[in-house]
Image (cartoon, rainbow, N blue to C red; front, side):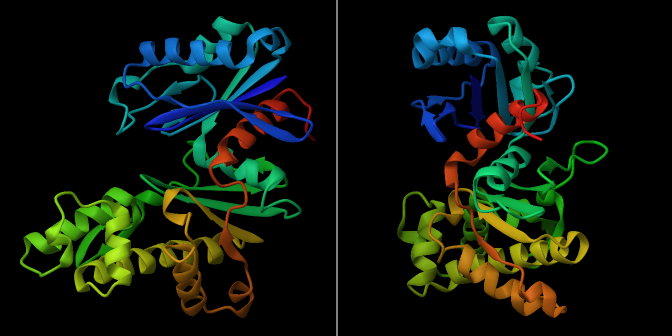
Length: 304
């Protein structure tokens, strides 16, 4: 049995595939202290698997980067600063005496979509997650494209025009970035119905934009245009068969997927790229677990 682990900035889930169906556990909070997190994760796995724990043959892990897949150690994680240098791969291998495999969550999600989801049957698959963070993954012939420094797909770092400021894609298109942009415009004196809220959340900005609020519309259209710009770059440089969009902001297609697709097709010059599918991911929030399982299976030689 191969276990898949999806480590997020705020919650973590585990699962395995049985008779081609994903069996999921309940999630636990991702503790900011890595040692406490490891204890919580161990308790979750043992409760989830019970007697099946003896059948474990490998563990795949998808987690936010930066990270080193070879050493299994994390770099400087903005949302989990205490994890810097923490080698989760070796710690899990010591706990369960099975090989563990670690990879960037966007890369792992792309592998999951390529093998089990919307990218199945395509040779060149791109997946983009748009949520608290921004990231892309590329799979060619069922294999993750890592890049020299395991930084392929770090599109969050693209330089963009963010409402008149030179900035990065993350600050224009992520959930927190959208909220910050709204507050910035309000602080600069622009009138907005958002001002009536005690706390502004990402969904509020979308809802107020669709209800005609000028500030919200400006912020959301800025996010759409910049994400379309990022996808345009991917289309003209990598020429994928399909681009899949996932993450929290893509749950309702009207919020991100549909308007971004429309803007991508307006931006691209080559007619071929106007025919490249840009659609919501099939596996949704299960993509990382599917991909983590596939990562371990590939590394164990079970997937060609």
